[in-house]
Length: 103
Image 1 (tube, rainbow, N blue to C red):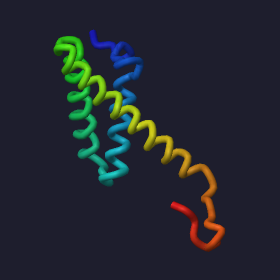
Image 2 (image 1 turned 120 degrees about the vertical axis):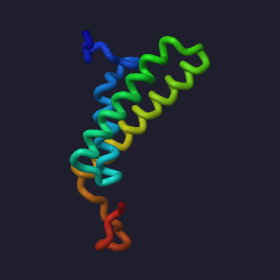
Image 3 (image 1 turned 180 degrees about the vertical axis):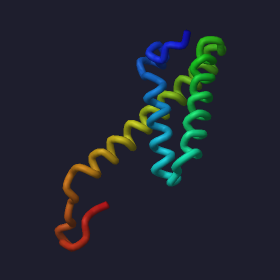
Image 4 (image 1 turned 45 degrees about the vertical axis):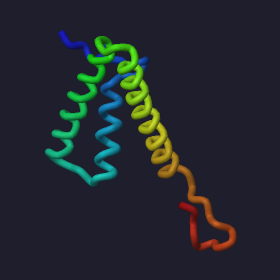
């Protein structure tokens, strides 16, 4: 039986990665409705195949896949942190032109 709590890649739960990727694509491409459902299903399938391949690929290819998956996770973390902070912290005002905030 499939147990989603056992699907980790180097300590990172793949369901969280799929959620992050879908949310990222929704915000960038203004997706909604059935398109988001299809996107999440495709990303889930692709990441699960990649996760399964890590164990059977030769070491060189497994390392490349490992680097790619870690890069996705760090990119999502960075963009999510920026979005979180940007929405919650006060805007920084340019002192030279008080009417124009940074960003």
